[in-house]
Picture 1 (cartoon, one colour):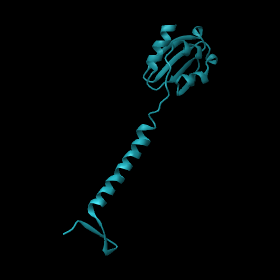
Picture 2: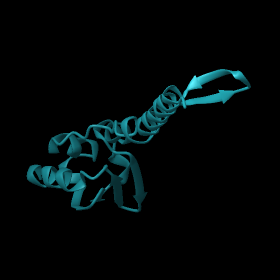
Picture 3: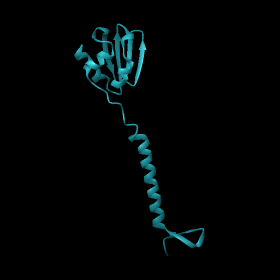
Picture 4: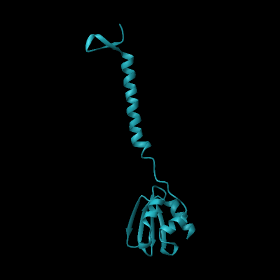
Length: 124
């Protein structure tokens, strides 16, 4: 008895190992595409710059900063004048989101807020 699977008619048949091999190849392509779109492409994050003086300049200079704290990916900065911040420069430095409330600015920095906070505090 041969390992053949009949297709359409009794005369035409494809060997069973070829069918299994083709199915495995298709499965590998599907797995690769899933990994590509869920892991490889999204992992290209912004690079965060850690020079404290760059952050201080973007936040309106030393005399504008009253307090800096960090929790996880959020950097909270209490400022004297929120109008002095340079939003474009903060985005260039790696900030993904900026939330301004009265004199407090919260910056979302992909898991690097504590490093940035300590770099700022060293310069202050």
